Image (cartoon, rainbow, N blue to C red):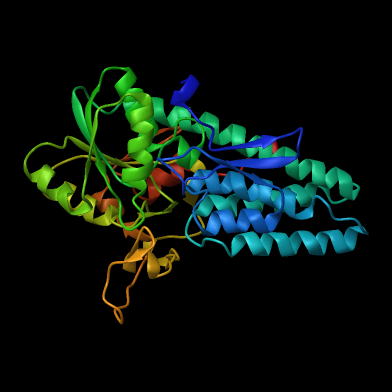
Length: 359
């Protein structure tokens, strides 16, 4: 990808020492970058979904940790306490996407290996880890795209949910990366884009990326997805993931479970695409995954205007859990896990997703 077809969602500006974030709240109408100079700015960007998507949150967490300790001056013991505080602040932003926590764990492990170094050297190590995580996620996304396209079939009509492109994962994305690669190979005929209520990441972000790439697509209401399956107009469902646990259960954007049930009813393959950094082997099953509950205003209002009666309240879970039994395959940068279960995932991941040798 090149030119206007690809906007980096995050990158480090080394000259100005700032993290540049494409503000996804402004899309599709405006391409605008935020200059993140300090940790509070990044935390606000994460909480308000200016930056989102599991892999991208891992990248942001790594750079955010550096921003939180960059200007610290003092003895090492106080520096280490400050680092713990920064990690705790970032951990509290969003509870479901595991990549954020995985990046923070890698920082803690880097610290253990570098504890004897001077404070300034430790800071350099943390910044270097941010660069490395960004490079890793970019590489993983292109590998996922290739592996997923291999199993798509030809002349397929794909249903997507939420946003899983470059805006969510760096590189070319995860599930949407598969769509992009499949289209380049001539496999993808049409993409049906779930609008993805309540914040419309599908209608705003996925449709924008598909437009940038020149891929034919139609935006549909979330509630219309099963209708199009019933009509025989969907050949495959491809979604991303915010956390995948040991037995293959998947946490993803609210509404994913409904799609999986409908796809199962109509005999349509349901494919999950995610890097190995999205696996959480510390949890056995999906019921143990913490689900983020977001502010009710996202449901009660639209574009800043209240649409529900005064006095009405809302429940707003950001994610749901799709059981492994409903998933046809999980695609990672390492390959494809067909009909995932605990044994296949253990074999695929090899006991962990953190390569200590690379720290």
